[in-house]
Image (tube, rainbow, N blue to C red; front, side, top):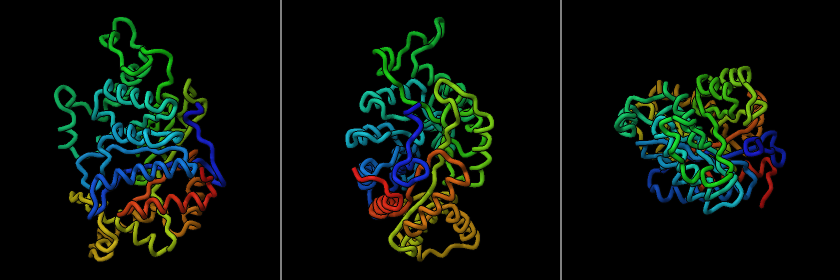
Length: 353
């Protein structure tokens, strides 16, 4: 349970963590984005953030996090203490045995530091999802998630019953090599389905407030009301992802977050691309429908000066009762994101290692 529940540092009301999408800005490369990811993870560790997670996305030029296990292995080699995990791996895209092997390997690299966050969406469009799920798994999807989760858990625990077709199959590295803690499983979601499943199984739950804010409180209420104590947790533990960006100047913060808003407009209209520059976003001629979307989107992005961001995060924690806030900073450049995490850490008085 200690591997799940965080401890607030400084004057933060709840533990603060980082969700990184390894975003690629116009005029930069995936190499630049992944180098920034290393810098963000190291900064998060030195400033007292609790976790660093990466999210699986596919066929999105502006997001370089298609292979969370690969990124996390590299991050593990450049950090020492911070918890590392997926926020999340999209289970329908992969054979459960493969995930068990990947995260067993990560646990061997960084013992006691790995979280396995799982989502049931493909993290991409239908055509790309079909390309990911070749062969017999092509027709599997979100509805098969509970069965896939059960199979993955069996592989992680190496406890298929005698007579099961997989009883002689072992996920290596894993328990078959001796007593070892395995990565705790988190369920991720943006609706009530995963909230209810996490509650039924007594697992920690992470909600994607950053792109489904209207469902946050209903999903968290459902999770808490339905929670059943388990060997993993004796009480519910809910983390929410929140988009937040701090800058030394309020206008600069607005200028930076508009790049993420324009990127989302393009994604939602079938035109995914690199994250636009602040200049491009400022010059873009939004239609009335696009402007309506942008205003709604930015209404759920906590941005401004460090004081304004801290106030917004504190209010969000209070309104939702979240046990942990996982911050994602969406902006064109790595420098702006690094500066944002530094300012947020300063605003909360987080320690410097």
